Length: 243
Ligand SMILES: NC(=O)c1ccc[n+]([C@@H]2O[C@H](COP(=O)([O-])OP(=O)(O)OC[C@H]3O[C@@H](n4cnc5c(N)ncnc54)[C@H](OP(=O)(O)O)[C@@H]3O)[C@@H](O)[C@H]2O)c1
Image 1 (cartoon, rainbow, N blue to C red):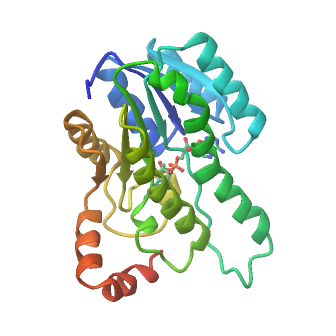
Image 2: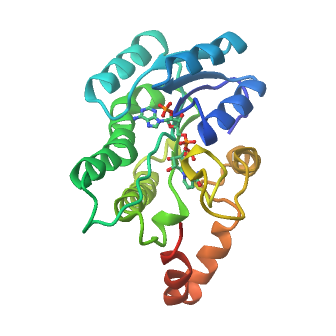
């Protein structure tokens, strides 16, 4: 993929991995449609970079997604890359969590249904441009789960499988997957050790993006996949107590 001259929609662009992707892609000479809920942060990014187009949108809300799609179709038909990055993780015990159904539904909506809807509705726009790409951000926890986040792991496993199948169906679109290990962001604040920075993740991803290496296991996820091939039981033991 070309590293400049793209128009890239990034969900969850106001923090963590999404924000690091935004900084890198803008500095490489791309335009970025930055999607998130935090209007102030979006405004600050747009003031800092003229190549950032801010769009306030809660990807968990159907009406917000519809507004976003309409805006892209009408104002940005040259959008050629969609990065589904926004995500939420709740840690809970299903037998004890008082807001169980709400948390489960929110995780499924934000992590799985929103990316699917954006892919479905933006596919005609993306496909009309060349080159076109979809980038889905999943997780090592979508390969081997931890006990504390059963639905989060399920949404990432689902997105992992959907990404692979779409790659078979859509030869005209490069369908990438970023599979991160633990990354030091607000999502993992106060938990876990040995985290990489969002910038380290972006360094690895950008190399893969340029070479069109579509399934991008980042850092320790490469080792996890190796162990999981040799001994799935060992991989399960390593990951199940994850924080
Ligand atoms: N950090 C890790 O260790 C790790 C590991 C594996 C995979 N991942 C995945 O990487 C992606 C990014 O995670 P991160 O660690 O960068 O998380 P983060 O620091 O919490 O940032 C998440 C971003 O998504 C936005 N967001 C959350 N809910 C949203 C919604 N309903 N609508 C629109 N935007 C929303 C947040 O902004 P607002 O809340 O302000 O709207 C923020 O910009 C996620 O898909 C996550 O599952 C992370």
